[in-house]
Image 1: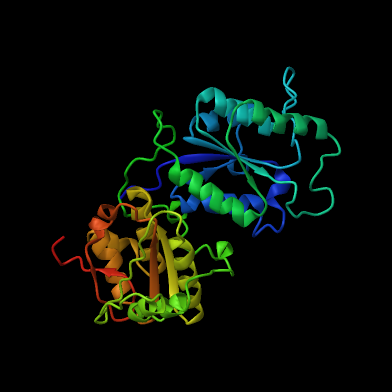
Image 2 (image 1 turned 120 degrees about the vertical axis):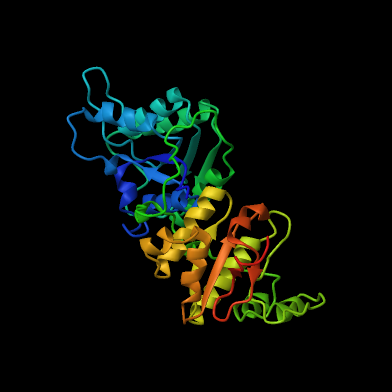
Amino acid sequence: MALPGRHVFLSFTSELTRFPTEATSWIECARKGVRRAGDVAVDMSMFTASDTPPPDLCVAKIQECSVYVGVVGFRYGSLVRNDDDTRSYVELEYETAKTTGLPLLIFVISDDAHGPRGFHSDPHFGDRQDDFRARLDTDNLTRCSVSTPEELELAVFHALRDLPPTGGDHGRSETVAVAGVDRGALPLIDPPFGLRSTALRGRGSMPADLARFDPGAAEESTGSDPSPVDGHKAIVLHGIGGVGKTRLALEVAYQARDQGRTVWWVAANAPAAFEAGMQAVGFAAGATDDDYRHANAADATWRVLDRLTTPWLLVIDNADDPSALNQYGPMAKDEDGSARPNTAAPS
C-alpha cells in the first residue's frame, strides 16, 4: 500500500504554534491541512539532537522535501546568527526552498486576524518582517491571505490537492507493505468540522434527510423526482465544481454524528491518499496488522467495518475520478454502515 507521497516543509515562527490555543493553533491547523491532503508535514520542531549546525540541518531537511509551505505572520522570528548570516530561520527556509526549486505555497495571515496584544507586530524586527512580506510580492508569488486557523487548514489542503506533479520527486515515499506501517504517518480521517458553515442555504431539509439516510426524501425536498433507494446506503453527491458538495457532505456528517454515528472522512483526490485514508479507517474501526497480513487491503478494511455493531458513516470526498475507487469494489447495501463496496461483486 502506498503511504502519503510528499514531504511538505512547513515554515513558520514559533508564536503561531501557540495562538489561538495549542490545540487549534495556526500551525496545528496547517499540519491538519497537510495530512488531509495525504502528505507528511516536516518542520524544525521535529528535528532531533544532531552534531550538524542548525542552519545546515535546516537546509538539508528542506532539500529532502517535495513542497514548501510558508505561513507568514507578523514576527520575523529567530535569527540564524552565523558569522556571515543574520537572516531569520524563516527567511533562510524560504530562500533555500526557492533555490532548490520546490513549489512555493505562501499563506499570509491577514491584518484582521484575531490575536492577543502584540500578535500583529514585532517590537524588535518589525522593519525586517515588513520587508520580507513585501519581498513575497516582488518575487511574483501568488499568495493566499487567511484570517483564521480553520481557513488556513482548508487553504493548505486545497493548494496541495490542486498542486500539479513536479519534475523533482524529493521526499516521495516508496510503496511499503501494509504490515508494520507507522500509523502516525497515515492521514487524518476526522471530518473537518471546524470548516463547517452554519449558513448553509438553499438545501432545505436535504442535510437532515441525508443524515437519516433517506435519499428519496432529500430529492423530494429539492423538487426533483425521488428515486427508489431500496434500502441502499451508498449516497453520491455530484455536480460541477464549486456548487457546495463538500459543504453539504460536511453538514450531513455533522448531523449524523449528532445522531450517534461514528463518522470518518477520507480524501480521494489521489489514489495514494485514498488508499492510506482507507487503511486509517480500518485501524480506527479496530483492525490489526494481522488483519492486513492475511488479506487484500480492501477486503481487510471492509471486513472490519462489517464487524461493527454500531452505525457509522464514511464520507469519501473529492472523488473526481471514480475509477480511483475501483480498488475497493462496487458499492452495496450494508446493515449498519452507510457506504460499503461489495468486493465480491465483479467490477
